[in-house]
Image 1 (cartoon, helix red, strand yellow):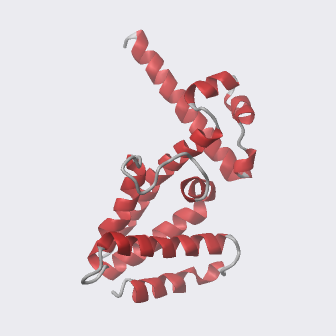
Image 2 (cartoon, one colour):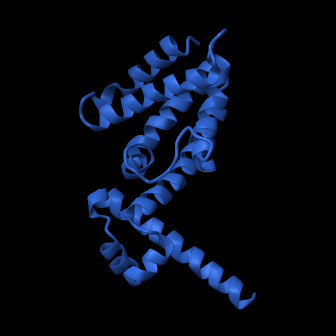
Image 3 (cartoon, helix red, strand yellow):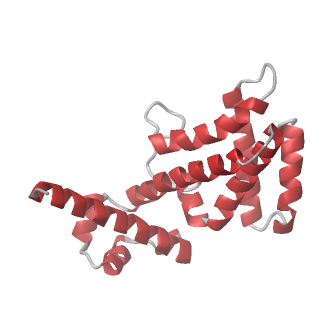
Length: 192
């Protein structure tokens, strides 16, 4: 291994450490607790080292969002693949999405609530975000219905899931009613 390759590997390792530490701190104490000073202390590097990787908190949030998008895509695809019918696949997708939002609140916020400097629904949208949407579309396209654009249907279904996730987390909906909501969403919106 050349010196250059070793330096690149070390740089990539530091970047992963920064993102993992930011994510851990955000999940434990919320995004307000994530500062470059705190991150530098936790990872035992100077603030200038952090700034050599990320220009600031916004870019760190974006990096956490991209990591989370990749994880969400994997979770949704895995859940949907276990379904033996269109209805079972859609219900599994919905449960996996809501489970991801519940168990990864800081990551979910980085993805959908906070400004991470990422472009959504545009040509320059980063691949992990496109892939997360594609994971939803792959399953939902088969139940969109005649004459309904699969992408638009996926957006509406996703919006419903997002609403359920954020309203439940905010205490506006009772958490024990998640399953009846999923059933209603699948039966009425997906019509399967």
